[in-house]
Length: 123
Image 1: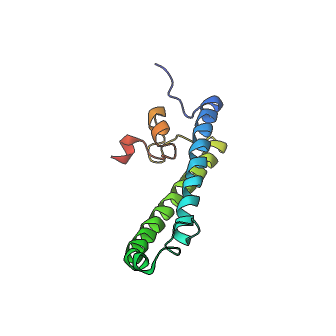
Image 2: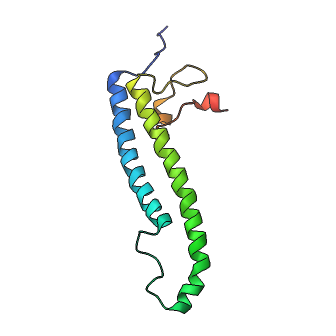
Image 3: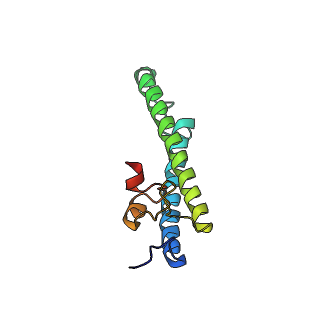
């Protein structure tokens, strides 16, 4: 009977690190776009339009900024999860289910690289 792997190899961890770094770069760019929308520095405001359009768009603008703020916070948490995954790679604990102690399948980690639970544990 084959012995069950306790952790991913350094080569496998490097593969995951590259995947996470790529996702982290995209996530940070999206976060900056969302943050610019919330703060109002993206240049897409109604300051240069006529007063009539400005009045009509104010309520939509408030709703848009609230949604952008919500998405911005969600993106910030995603970035934090990816950064924590990088720490687990450095500690060589990446991919180990925090509930069962078994390796999370590679397919799951490729789909959700910041996962800390296997599907089995999540159920």
